[in-house]
Picture 1 (cartoon, helix red, strand yellow):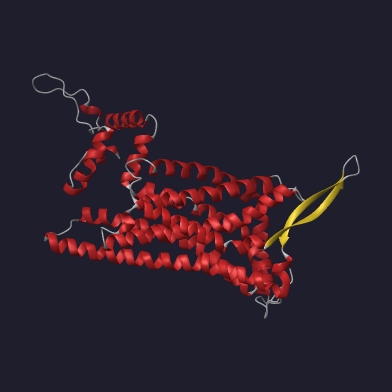
Picture 2 (cartoon, rainbow, N blue to C red):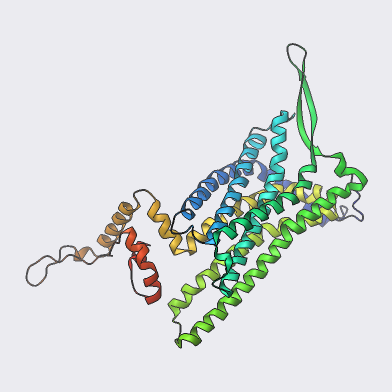
Length: 404
């Protein structure tokens, strides 16, 4: 790759710069053998988590909301990402072949390069869509964005938009023969590797630089900016709605109700923080690669490529883990569909009560009758569903609290 980068980015004669670049190379050599196995484990576990995530969101209790429809789209995009990374790390890292691969496997490698970038961008844009839907509904509870059909159309349009942006990335690579061998009949068999296409390398890599600008700005920076802006708008609208509720009801919100109302704020802040932490560095690297293509690729991108892949895989866990930790209705639905969960939770509750209050188990009343200790009331699944709204409104102990 011979691209005109203009003025040099690094002064290789400077001892500090040279030592830092050497540290990145040493880190790459140390981490690369670990990464290939760690990535496979993350992909397998992530596929399980996101499959459960889709299963839960498809339950009748949750599938009727547009936000959950977008979350299903995010989970499907994350599954595509992890399937692609699982194939890549298994075939091209663990079972690496130094001379090349068959034409089909090399074509799969080209698809992985394109699909991994596209799926990250689709996930990021879908998170933006989810934040936009919540923002519109908070302003206007009767908004048309509450309909799942409109959310589905939005997901499809965003996927098509990102697919169009990914066409230059696909054209950026081509399959090249790297090695051949003769069989017993003296017939040549070629092995292939991927390389940059001549079209992208002509005229000082102008098309490659343009593709990197598209990737960095349209697929990373813009959705991150929109996500940050919408999150700020959501937090502001939550405060406005809380003040309106106080003025209308003429009541002072207690600490428990305030914390319950802030759960959504914490969830959004956590999601935007993780997405910004994982996606913004990749956008900055893509933009710097467009400005200093050859030098930046050799000294920065190549040593840190595995770390960027790790961040992308961690990003695939965000939606599931955040909802499990912050959404009580999600946890309730998850527990109701898990096999034998009622029996397991009942046994755990009985053991805890026995350990905490052993002296009350065989206590007797003054008239000699046996007193059965008061334990946590267990509720059926239907009672959990029916009493959730009442519990949140009245603030009293309910089947929902016990079920969690």
